[in-house]
Length: 120
Image 1 (cartoon, rainbow, N blue to C red):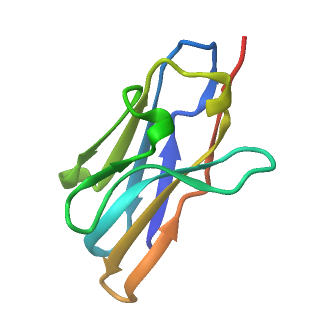
Image 2 (cartoon, rainbow, N blue to C red; image 1 turned 120 degrees about the horizontal axis):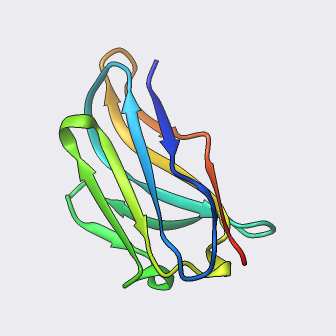
């Protein structure tokens, strides 16, 4: 079974930092794209940052200069370093991957989500 396991969320004060991790596990042949989305209460899920199929990095304008996405291909893991956090960054953060599983072929997989709360 292929799954994404996220960690690193929590409560942080405005201006603080957090690092989220997302590890893909299971029988995976390749990962085509992987990244982070978030959903705040009452709002639609939106892309935060991600690596595309072509190897480029997409990052939302609202977090440019504050958030950095990185990856460890050997560990099938992506990280999201979030600096200068603002209350409006409060949301459930979801990891997403487009991958090729050994048994099931092409899959889009979501993590369970990790809550980030920015509050004083």
